[in-house]
Length: 263
Image 1 (cartoon, rainbow, N blue to C red):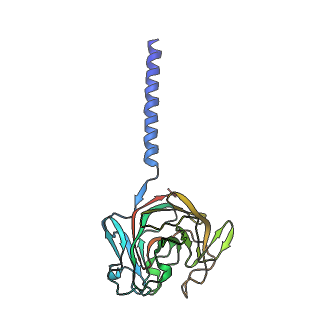
Image 2 (cartoon, one colour):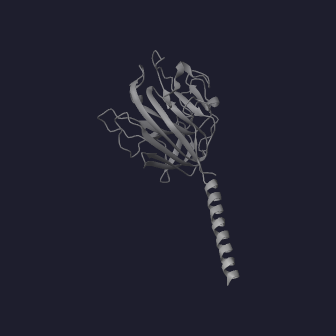
Image 3 (tube, rainbow, N blue to C red):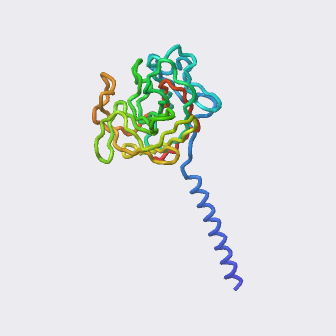
């Protein structure tokens, strides 16, 4: 009887320890969110502003203030189509990206009407070194951010496609910008935006927890491909850069994190 009891105690102990070890291993192997922005400086990020070479942060457009990447036009006399993008150093294919943004202040003098409270995050994009000197936008997909003017309907989390086409419900769509189902955000509060990207299979735009736009199968094409581009029309796009946009209205970005889904 004593031997039987001792055996049961030993077996129970082994089972408990085994479960704990299995739980620890499972926890250690679970995907982890990675920060793309250290909150202090632009380490890991490269600016490309139209009219300037890759790596030159002209007029100190991109800077870090109060723990956020700030797009500022304080040193601009006037905005003359100096559209800019701040590229993260690594390319991605399958991932879940999340960040917060907020528009504030006034639009830069010279900014076009459509660019009022207009910015975004570009993804599946080209490398900044491949862009022409005066090229305004990378070939990419854009999760477009729009802010309201206090009156008109102006959804955010839309899709724009410089140099690409996409499929929505198995139908090829060649429109440059396509409106999401989000509500209009009129004030200067922080907005949480998320991207779920699975190679060439599916993409989802999420605003404050609500999925507002979904599509699939991006491919190169359309009138926004740079002249003389080597991109093949109709070729599937499966990966690329991530960049933050400067379009003439002051904006901040923070809490930029990524979860790699291919791991």
